[in-house]
Image 1: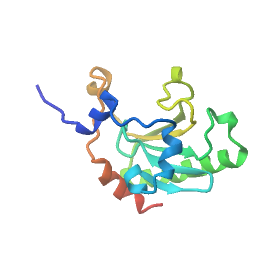
Image 2 (image 1 turned 135 degrees about the vertical axis):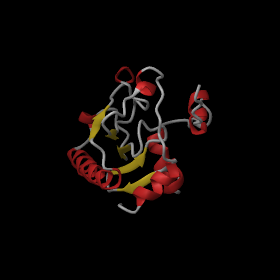
Image 3 (image 1 turned 90 degrees about the horizontal axis):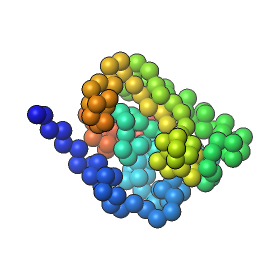
Image 4 (image 1 turned 45 degrees about the vertical axis):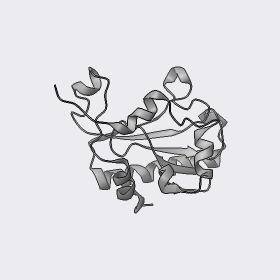
Length: 158
C-alpha cells in the first residue's frame, strides 16, 4: 500500500481554526496577502488560492461584497469578476499549461458551496487523465505542489 502524506488537509478534516463569520469577508481584512493566499486585489473583487485545492492552481475570484449569489451582485462587480477570471485563465495557461478548465459557481450548500453565503467563482485547471482512480474511487485529490510554491509562482503575474 502506498501512503500519501497530506498534512495540510488535517485542519480541514477536524475543523480546526474555522473562523467565526464569513471567511471571504475576513481574509481581505487580515493584512497579509501571502498568508491568506490572496494573489490580487481589484476594485470590487479579489483573486485567492483555494486552501484545499482540487488541482494545482485552483483559484477563486471573490467579490468584496458579501452576497449569496450571482444575481445579487451589481453589474460592475460582475464585470470585474469576469475580467479577472479571464486574467486568471491566461496566467494559469502560461504557468501550468493545462488541457482545460472547470470554471463555475457553486451557489447554495446543496450545490456544493463550501462557503454558501458568499458567492465566488472557481477556476480549476485540468489535465487529460487527472481524474484517475484516486479521485473517483478514493475520493482523494493529489496536489503535487506545495501551496506556498504555487503562490510564489503565480503572484508575479498579478
